[in-house]
Length: 135
Image (cartoon, rainbow, N blue to C red; front, side, top):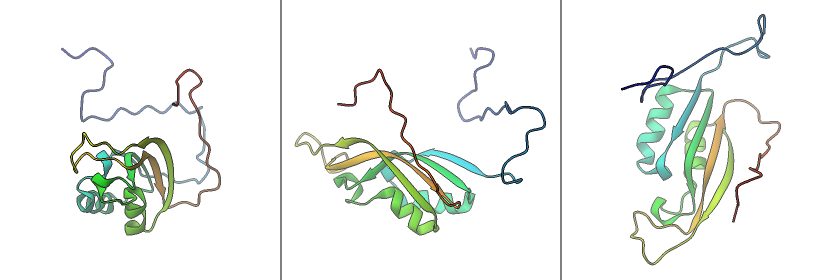
């Protein structure tokens, strides 16, 4: 049974928490998309879908760079180049090569998150969790 206030799977929750009378800096609305691309498996299909959606800002999770399982590609950069967007990548962790993995799951590169945007990027920052080990 769904609890009151919980957003069901596949549904989007929005709420405007800005102060009354707030005017957006650019005076326009933007189209924002968030997607866990699962290492870029089915990359051509991902690119096709993203082109159809045509978002102004795209936040991607599970972006592979240089991993065997994704053909050694920078999957986020491949998407940005195909769409003509600015690209920002943050490495979350090194994905070590392991003799225990098959080619479909093999590492050997890095894995992280990316932002792709039609806008100029003027500043990028990383917020590190104080209480979580990064090693």
